Image 1 (cartoon, rainbow, N blue to C red):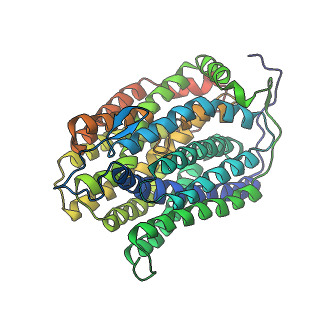
Image 2: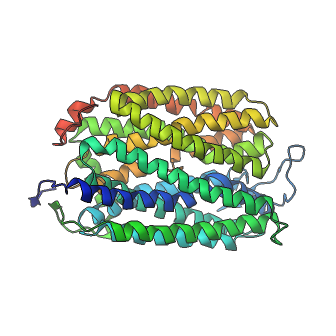
Image 3: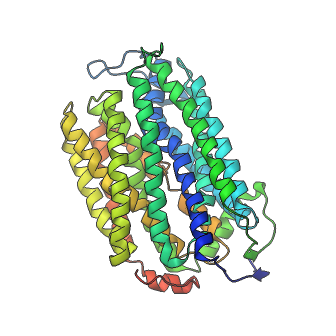
Length: 460
């Protein structure tokens, strides 16, 4: 793992950085179509219904639950848990593929081209969900896996670009503003989705057809707005030159990345802590729609309205937490947010079914902390990465990101399958926040930044 050449990071002047930062924000807007409208709101309930059809349970209600299993490779699988296992499979595959994705991007002079390529693959998969009808849950499973892997790949490259366009003192600001801008994009598309789903008869569509049409629009949205960062960002020379990497070398590249990160113990500690508390965050986001629909008896439009509220309060929360981080430091703000997450999960466990007001208040509470937690974790991790390996390190980071956290979804699916209760499944997620918070307390951020050879921001 020898370094043949290493060049120091040189930042552009402020007007140039600001211009690229504005272009960078647009990818948050672009991919929010898939993350919010597809992954969070519609695809899990929709694929669960398709899986129930495949299991011979077309009319599942609280009084008439599905008692049949799907049989996948000879293994019985609850149709209500199948979608969580699909997400788990996508994450495991991502974990193996992402180090190669990161290494290729780091050794390329055009990260923006890789960003556009992965976005295009994901957008086609998202649009392809339009074709999933009846009991054809297998096609939906394949497309969801492809879409999630492409999303993580694009976000790996996207996060690495942050290091190139923002100096250390700017990253909390840029990261939180970008996340807030993405929430605005997600909000716009969610409102349009709500209109289409709620007024499907007006458009001559069934509710299922309306949901499928939203999948198609989300794919076009993702691909179309990705053009803005592709045009607005610029290519840069490679900072560190190393040996060649091949797509077939996933395991070797993964070993190389894991071996290298052990040389930076504080970075590794943060990554492990992040794996746990972010698993909790992402699993709550991923299962919220199913939990609201299946356990709390909420209509699809109510679930969409809840996510709209999350988007609105998320914008406020991201900006507010970014301002607090400017005074207290991202590290301390993240620790405080983890405490809030524990309280949110506890309330979610005891909230009664069919009480719309309480469900929407819970959604607002999630929005106030979700964007800031994620954005500040991203900017804090960027300070702990050695020069020239940004995308490679963010490949490990992103393997646990954006609702593809395999531990959380696996635990949620298993608890639901063995207990038959989504409530026990949701409360089990408290463990992830507690373990993540305890591990994060052991991270010496200042030391980690020094060990990585980076310049520390004024406030940690």
